[in-house]
Image 1 (spheres, rainbow, N blue to C red):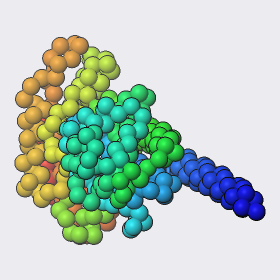
Image 2: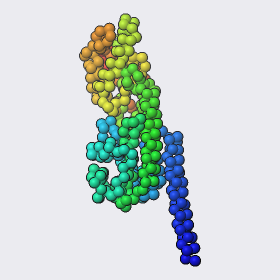
Image 3: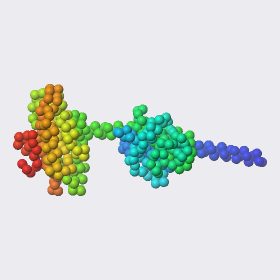
Image 4: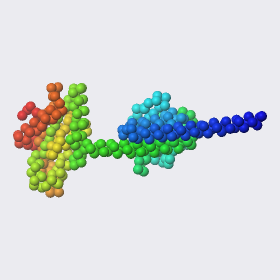
Length: 358
């Protein structure tokens, strides 16, 4: 009888292990399914990263917190998305991490398992992560897009030695999903950016300008912020095209776009309105906008534009108007600035006119 009981106990133990493994496999497949599903539900980068990280934290039972770090334009590792299991929601981040951590991510080949942050020799640099985002055990895997290292996915646990081999394999698969999400989102962002940018001047095209200008105008209406519309036109541009050809005309347009971008503030919204006409919205008053517009006149007229036909002197005319409570729409604001621009041309060009002062 004792042997029978032992045999039954052994079978039950085996069945329990098989059941546990099957449950783990089901959990892994569900996690990967949910992560992959996020790739087709949205192309917003932050939302995609949150989905991937949430699935990782929920799909690996030992994990209590997670972090996705991305490499920014200055080659700094920045914490973009965090997730705490206890709050069941994303964590607002934005802090940067040390160069030591970036070096550690760069050195990762697959998933790095640090069983105990307090005792493991590998863990020294990871202790620099801000308090509250790590515990005792850590999993780290790099995120690579087309072979280039762009960031890392990290999970932590409160207990040492919390992660097993299956967790490492699942995290590696999730990292591949996260990298695919990054690739898709960045391609989408680039397509969106190109659709809003004039390829010749590098400024916003008409569509891009109006999309952003409508929001800026609405903010001015809602909060009473000052707003000035600026219309700028290259003087005698038709003569440049007729005399030197459209290629040279394009070279002039490109250079004027460059000078506009350099002369105005980062916060100013600048676009190519059409042809040789440019437009800008400045969060400023008329006196401040006049200073900026006069600076533009000087910057453009000061030096000739270097073209394939040689240096060409170029000047511009500018019209400006300020937003007022009785201004009915963004179109009306721009129309008033255009009227002032026409007055500047009528007055002899290479000058600035303010709507209402003609």
